Length: 463
Image (cartoon, rainbow, N blue to C red; front, side, top):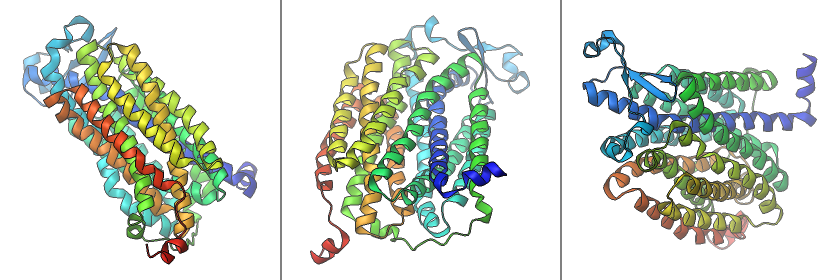
């Protein structure tokens, strides 16, 4: 009890807020990347099984050495007569012969990846104003609880429909954690430089989640099984939610929040829309790559399961570096617009360059550039959105970070949704070219964020 009282003192409470938000972002994005590294291979194995027996029975996937054995329980599929059917291993087959099946898997992967962001997109307009009304702590607690449920459901799901349900629950939990967490940080750190530094540290949790998630998920899936990484994440969620509940005691918090600017008013602010657009298009880049690249690697490079996770490792490490560097520097020198613009142009050029990659080493380099550019955009625009509310509206942050999270969700929703059909119709290289070109074309709009006018200035000019 003495330790809790010490942690709740004002001098340490800011650090505890930052720690809880760090854990929340780490958890949400680690779960995101774990799923990305497991789904393509798992659904491909499911596709082989269903094409072999024409059923939609629950699947069991077990690693045996360097291979995965996929089978249905004998009592549910008599045609198997109790024998396991080995999945086609990429090292034992010609990759080009799997093209039609992988194109089908591409669409399923896209649907599953997009479902989380679609649900989060629907939830954010409600979560943002609710955060402004009842405060952050109850929603943070709810977010941790829902995420625990989603991870457990992922662990025990054996069909596409159950995975879809788990992914939707992750969207609800992610909405609560992201919106309430970022709003709580902005409200706790009022000084712009301190806010930029705090958000840079918080985004380190996001980056670490991405770093750990993909390699951890793919390695655990290959050598231990699908269930194991999700159970580990459930334990992390319990620890994070328990820490938050012990320190902040959400059930006893009586929050009197200042009435914030209505969500629709913020949506009519052109500067907030440009900032949200930058976040959306940069997120679209990484969402398309996450959805389409693993299948393309299986199809053209005979990539193994561990390679599907490792290929995103440079992406996450460079994101971590960029978020810590530019989150502080951009606020210190008032160059958020310039950093975001350069980051978007770099991301666009790098995305187009994916069409020329020939092996996994090329992909590792390109992903490093992608992570650095996206980290630059996120770590500079997120604090800027808090500043826009400070100078142009009431300094209550739930709704503006709901808009920011909506922008992220649109990117993660549209990216996987369009990647499957476009890859199927015109191919992976053209998908990368289109997404890269769109990102480059949006980048010049960031110049309008150079010196946004204060609210009283806007009123006097009739805007």
